[in-house]
Amino acid sequence: MALIVICGATASGKSGLSIALAKEISAEIINADSMQLYRGMDIGTAKLTVSEREEIPHHLLDILDVSEDANVASYQQLARTKIDELQTAGKNVIIVGGTGLYIKAIIDELNFPDRDIQVRDRIDKEATELGAVEMHKRLQLLDPIAAAKIPANNLRRVVRALEVIELTGEPFTAQLPRKDVDHYQGVRQFGLVMDRSNLDERISKRVDLMWEVGFVAEVQQLISAGITSGKTAQAALGYKQIINAIADESSLELAKEETKRATRQYARRQETWFSRDPRIKWLAPESTSLQLEKILALL
Image (cartoon, rainbow, N blue to C red; front, side):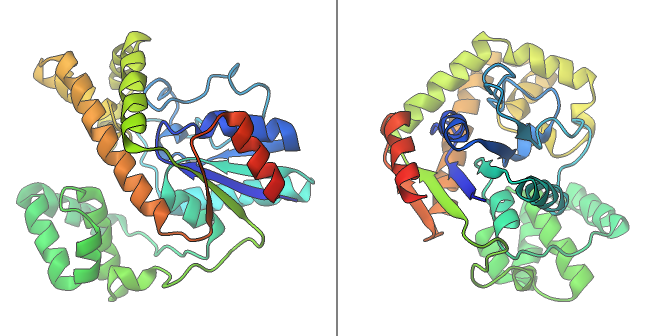
């Protein structure tokens, strides 16, 4: 049975293409967007509505409360279990999303060190006291390669790297594979690419639409549901900006513009991540039907 990946930057058209392909080859879809794992995070993550899914079964959507922290190790286990179950039942499977590490965790032999809550809590406390810059300096001393790859402002990843180093006694980078080693054989990966100006315009329009259809109200409901008690969900694009605006009683219009800027930056990082994988077949920004034809011709 076929195992296909559709990846690319946010707002590049992955969801629409995945639905068209799933209908054509009778496939089911595995979500590979880390923020679409959360219940109630619908508008800001551009999660397809039930009707938009066109009766195509989707898996690993809405499986976490916003107060819970997502992690790639748990996701890897859930995704592989579901894929194995579907393939055993004779189903084609399409993995769709823009969270590069989550996709890699499924299709490649990528192992994740265990976690230690006490160690993590202590490092978190130190990070709160010392700040992101000092924690990044510590990582630079212990693992310069990891520090070069992880931005200082990504405190969550810096803390995780320091946790792994303490638990294993090895550099964080030593835990990652030096080359891609397939976990599943015959995976076909397709990436959606778009010129920067068009992608930026699509992002801007998408964020405007999110505000129009009730994104702020969604975040207000999630604040009541405990989104600020977790670390992962409240850091999501748009959610973070609105939460901060509500807390500071500042302009929601400025929060919208900041969401657009942060989303554009995120899209650049996604493009950089996926561009490193030579196994991805890139599809030009054409109509969904033309992209579908090209995929079917290569399967």
